[in-house]
Amino acid sequence: MTPVARSTTDLYLEQLARKRAPAVATAERLLQDDRFDEAEREIQRADDSIYGALEIARMYRRRLEQLVAAGEDRTCLAPVFRRALSWAHGAYPEPHTAIEAEQRDAGRAEDRAELVRILGYDPDE
Image 1 (cartoon, one colour):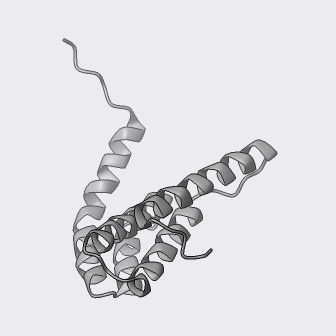
Image 2 (spheres, rainbow, N blue to C red; image 1 turned 90 degrees about the vertical axis):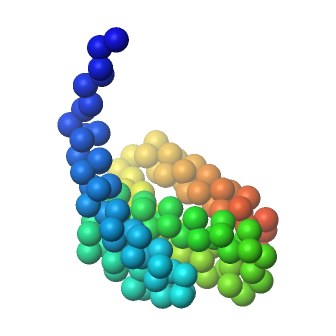
């Protein structure tokens, strides 16, 4: 079987992920202590692109899953939920057409639904 060549984009994304990895590990430790701003800055220093923003959103989603599994109370969960949602929503590019706006809105709705599924309720309702 002939190996499939990876695209330039795939190679670039792999390079960014490797560059972010140490920062993500540090950021996740900071997040354990609710040091949100420091955790975010750690990843942004390593990767201030949209992919860094997506990694921050994923980091908060993982943290939310941990907190829910540990049975934390709602006062601990809501700030993590809101930051996860904010970073996920902020990672969408500005739409330039109605179709792009619809796609962004649909994606944002899916992001919220996933976080609500993890949490079991919507803290903003």
